[in-house]
Structure formats: C-alpha cells, structure tokens
Length: 114
Length: 114
Image 1 (cartoon, rainbow over the protein chains, first blue to last red):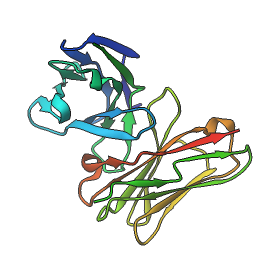
Image 2: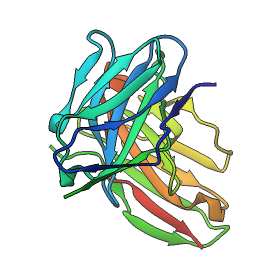
Image 3: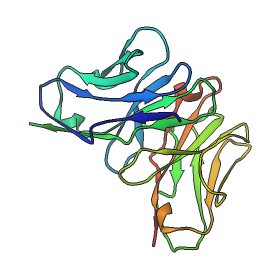
C-alpha cells in the first residue's frame, strides 16, 4: 500500500534558527512529491514539488526540500525560521499515473517562537 | 484570475440528511479533484473528474458521489450523512496536461454533521 509518513506531530523552533520537517514515502514507481502548508480555516497552499532532476528543490517563502531516493525521504527545510511560518505542513505523494490522487501525510504543526 | 472557489464555506447538517458541495475551478482548468480532511488528519482523496468523466475514486462509500458540468465546475454529494462525515472538504483543479503538478486547492467547505 502506498503511504506518506510525517513522524513528528509538532516541531518547535526558535525564530532565526533552521527548521526541518520530516517526510518519508512509500510509493510505487517514480514518485511525485509535494509540500503544502495550511493556515487555520484555510485550504492548502502549494510550497514546492519534486518531479525529477536535482534532489534539492527550492520553493516559495524560502523553503526547500531534499529528495533522497535511498532513504525514501523528502524533508522540508528552511535556513532561518520566521514566526509567520507557524502553520500545519503536509507532505504528499502522487504516483506516475495521472489519476489526480495525492496521498497525504498526517501533517506536522510547525511552531516558531520569537 | 479567481482561484478555485468553493461554496458554501460552512454548513451544518443533521444526521441522515443529504448535502451538496460546489466547486468552480480556475478558468481553463478541466480537472477537478475532491478531498476530505477530517480534523487532525491529512486530506483523503475522494474523486477526480476530467472532461466530465470520473478518472479516479478513493476508498469512500457509495453515499459519496460527484459530477462535473460542461463548464468544468463540480458538485460533491453526500447522502445519509453520518457524524463521521464532519470534515473540511477540499476541491482542487489543474490545467490540461498538468495533472498533479499543477494542483490548486480551494479554501474548502467545512461540513458539520450533528
């Protein structure tokens, strides 16, 4: 069965420090990987995606993610966290067929403290 | 350009009732997908429609149905509502040829079943 796991329910970091939100996946074939952010009572906002190519993907708001095929991971990173980055983050994976189906992790709440 | 619009934003229904949720995709987008996000969990895929045909279905009971209209808008119907159907229902659209790459999510409809 295909799945996406986010092992941490919550990540706490101090403003200005680097942050990492972890994600591992189990998807058949070449995975399409995504990170979305959700603010309270809002939909999902796209941050970045990995389809193919460089393992380091740069996205919106200074976020980046590193694709590691051997570890089946796609961790989200940012060199310097902002208080405004506090939100719920979802990792998602899609298979190679275009059925429109994304498999989401359970989400990680990022709390950035001043 | 308007984003993906969903209506209503909130609604409250009684167990056993039926509900219809609506989604208008971004202009030019022909694919619409529906997701259910229960509180504390990641979104779960319900349906995908492309050019008015169902292209994918998630693991949801037959009480859930959907359709897509000639203008590419979509409706999600849920019959015989259960308390467990309480969730945020998200719609996403993408342009032809983009599939998962080009997903844009709406802000969702918050359904509460009492």
